[in-house]
Length: 478
Image 1 (cartoon, rainbow, N blue to C red):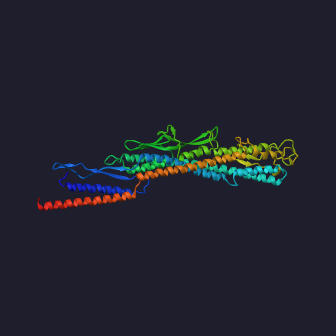
Image 2 (tube, one colour; image 1 turned 60 degrees about the vertical axis):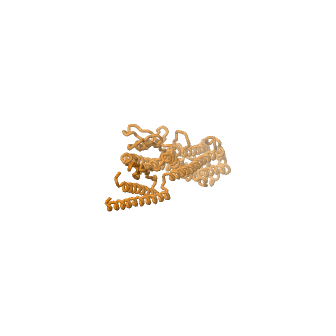
């Protein structure tokens, strides 16, 4: 220690408190910076030295520089955020589904089916009415159009799910690359005490949190501060190295089923590992594409598109099978003409997308069970009783099946909304807790600012006073 120990102490005090002032100023400046963790300069008394046999203090030293970031809260927020983001996508999806089916309204598929069967009931009383026959064909066309529109909209929604997955993969790969780059920066940016650069750590954590919105992310930290990142247990970042996510389309030629998987390849792309997140935006979009909107679903589960196709096919084939046994107003032969009301526009089995009204005239609608008896309505009676057929599909009549089908969609939609609201509360609580710990409190920082300012003024006074004393001593020639 210099003979002018008071000057040295004053200098150290100026440096330490000026550093503290810099830290506080940085906290205030970044109060609204996303992901910023409050910093604190930890000071300690410098090692003493002996003077006149006594241990005399030598001022202040900077002991350490800390961040208030907590790994536990970061981990819990990532988990909650992943679930919340997935439910958000589900809610938007089901909102679109409810618009497609127009429930409840007078223009939905169920109402069109009801009115169609109502005309068969009316024709069982007045089988020779051309007006009722024309109304029947008109309502049949409306029913077909409702099915076609719903199928086309669901197909467009499935294409959107495909696009969302591709866009999500692109976003995930950008975030994975950012995390690996931040790991590189952290590895070469240790400070004088060997600690990591907190700025890069904060930015890396923001990128990891954004990645967690896309899939269920877990993180492990090495002793050197680098982060290893996993999606659904599959490693995507190891220190400065990374893997690239890709979309893999799987086509089953036997069932014509198409599904999408999310995979990572090894560095030489010799083999791939399936990632398929279980939560987050990617998981939800995958579920929509692979299950809920998959018309050829072969793994079980609830497919909206598949159920709608079953409904359309069963309804059309049931009516067609009865139609084929009847006679029109002008039919005279002994053998029924085998006419149908619905057909496929593609030659394939009838479904909601390809169903269309056959080229049949009103007078040719086969409502009679025998030829040359235009007043006979046996076929019309059979058709009107379809509404009460408890074995129509899955042990239900047409309206029961359709109502339960729509009810299942509504139930899933409500569950998604409730789950979203619940997870939003969890995310909000966790964020509030984390902000209270690592966020910048302007009142506290203002107090620290005043404290460091006063300490700087006092340290300056030490130097000024010591300078005056030393000048006096020198002038006295002591």
